[in-house]
Length: 284
Image (cartoon, rainbow, N blue to C red; front, side):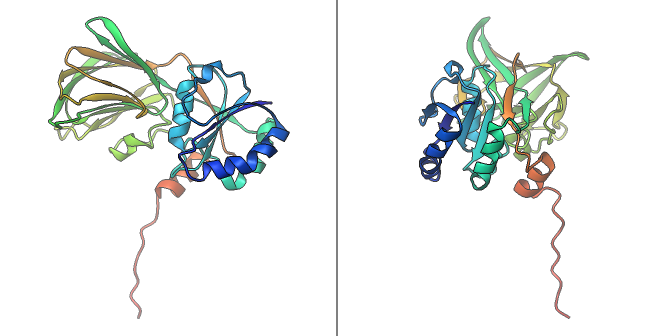
């Protein structure tokens, strides 16, 4: 197996971990390269797997830099939650052995293709594994957006006044989408969640639409700082007259799954989902 490593050394525990494990890793695989700046284009890498040491943000960046190349990513979590980077440093050697033997399951994750056109000319293009987010930005007045959804049920448009909107994949539904009151969408469901951010309406609720939908966002009123974020990493300012188009990309990202974990368990352990109420019983 040819292995490339992405290591986010801004995480304090990553460098000691890499120093201790790299000699052992070199004995198990054909080691083809190391990126410690988290900025190297990965679509030029010739490898069978990419080992990502960091957190979910590090893995998101690596997935984006693959630029469609189908190399599966194994994320070891040195951050907080670790929904995407769901392997642990404590069990690394055992899980890495399974990687080398070809025993780790791989799941395709849908990603979004995001473009911005200004007066018919494309000026921005990116992808998002988690979400594409329009935020109001400074000076933090309400913004107004027109959302159009084109899908199998036809075309419709709605006006949204508030602090912005989140367009989330299933992989990203437990991130900003969840914090904003959006639905949890199980990985594997072919759907996109549309969640308004602080809408100036009592009836604008989050909605789940098919992954085959094409969503457009047209700013009608914006602030100087109104911005489009893709996975919180690739950004561009938005202006009246812009047209944001979001659809499923023509490729997926491949992630190794941790066989010791699953989506239900991750929700319960990391977000305390379905936690029973805690009752205080007075001593009798």
